[in-house]
Length: 154
Image (cartoon, rainbow, N blue to C red; front, side, top):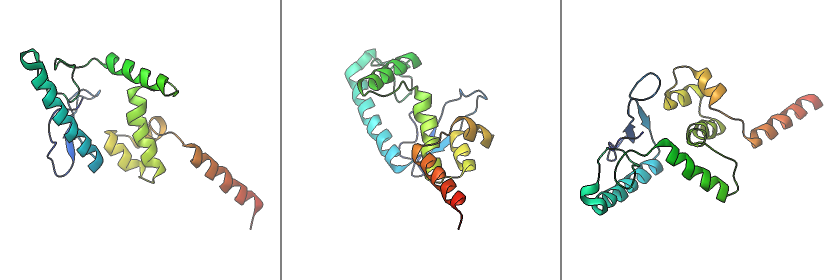
């Protein structure tokens, strides 16, 4: 869960609530695009607070319910399932979409595994590589092409 904190942080850090299996709080560096999107979300959140008035239940989260209470994970899962269905995509969980997607895309762009592990908050690089990083089809094609060149010889 993302706390409403750090939107103006020039270094692009946001503080995460305790809640991972180790109960740790950590900061994650964000791209400028992500910081802009979160800043825009804060503006929308302020409008939602005003619209709800006294019914607002402040929980300090970025994506609460319309009344300000914490959103249940199942609500997000159902919303994402509907988007996937409407777009003809396979079922994706928020976990797959965000964490695995981020690690896979960073790997495809050459970000070292140790750096990706730090961003995802993993103490073991093997966790990031074995569980959170998928191989993209273009990578498979490049690997097969490389194998073909090796087998053909000089």
